[in-house]
Length: 177
Image 1 (spheres, rainbow, N blue to C red):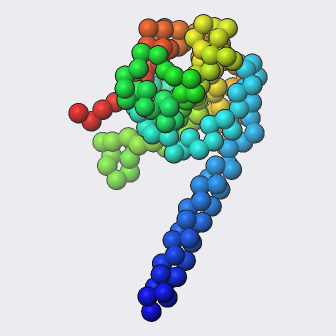
Image 2 (image 1 turned 180 degrees about the vertical axis):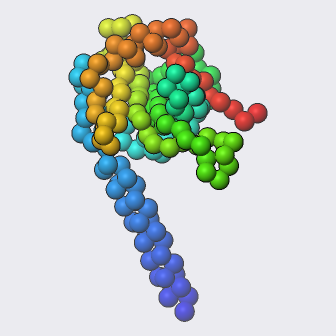
Image 3 (image 1 turned 90 degrees about the vertical axis):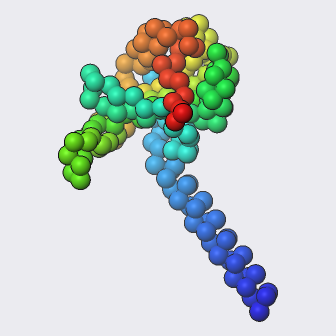
């Protein structure tokens, strides 16, 4: 009986593991093959971003958009340690959502539809021409599908240059205490 219980538990654990792995792989296979026109950053470069940690939220009043900012483990740990300069390999992802009134609580807004996924990656060997060592990518939703931002990353660079003193990041880790 003990062996049967061990075999049953091992089988269940294996099935759960395979199921979770399948969900992870299926979810990540939805990233389209897109490339930024001016720096060759791809959407696939952030595959698995759904599992990054949320570090902050921002609301863009000009776009009426809630943005969730996530970081890969390298970026998250640097933000957590309040690093002055982010380490190589840091990836910061921004997901912009339109908002709508919450049907169950009319005084509140909730995220509605993804409008864009943007990211920046710290890579001084590839992206040192601007002096900031960051590569920028933006993928926007058009008619239900993602497309690479056709204007390239110049707008990202000019906007982020306003926060040079924080290593070109608008975001800091938001804490609950």
